[in-house]
Image (tube, rainbow over all chains, first blue to last red; front, side, top):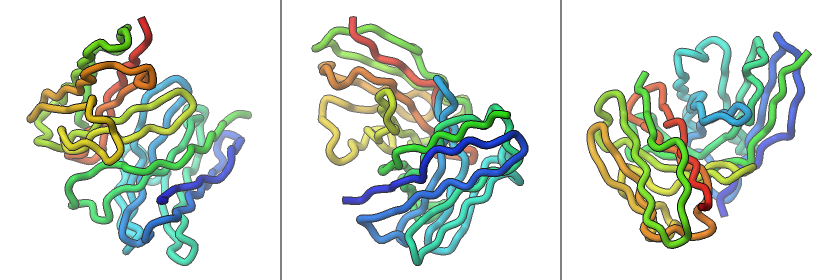
Length: 123
Length: 107
C-alpha cells in the first residue's frame, strides 16, 4: 500500500537550517506531487508548498518564499523540505502529503500523509 | 490570502447524533474544498474532496455539500471513532489554506 515515511525528530538552534525527508513507497513516485504541511503545538494546519515529483516544479506561499526549498530524488523516491533561518515559531510537526502531479490538476487534495516530524527550535 | 472560517470551533455530541460543521471562505472557491479528520497524535486523514466526493474507505455517514463560499460537513450518526478535530481546506488559490478546525468531543 502507498505510504510516506518521514525522518526523525530534530532539535535546532535559532538561525540554523533543517532538512526533513519523506520516503515514498507503494506507488509510482513520479506520477504524484508532494506537499508539506506544518502544525505548531496545539494549533491548526499550515500549507508550506508543493513540488512535482516529475519535473521539480514548485509552488510556495509568499510567506515562506526564500526560506523554504523543496526537492525530490526520483532514484530513491524521496522528497525533502529544507527550512532556513529557523525561529522559535517554526517549532512544529512537519508533515509531507501526497498531492496531484500538476499544479493545475483537479481535484486537488492530500490523500496520503507521512507520520510527521517534530522540529524543535530552541537555544 | 483566502481565509477559511469554521464553526463551531468545538462541539459536544453523543453517539448517534447528527453533526454539522460549517466552513466559510472569504471569497468564492468554486468546488475546491476538502475536509480532513485528525485524531490526537496522528496525521490528518482525507475524508472528502471537491466538496462532496467521499475518499475511498471513508464511511458513508460522512457527507459534504456547498458551493461558492459556504460549505458543510455532515456526520449522519456520530460513532465513537469520529471524535476528532475536523479541518476544511481550500485549494483554489495559492496559498492553500485550512480552516481553524472543529473539535468534536463526547457529551
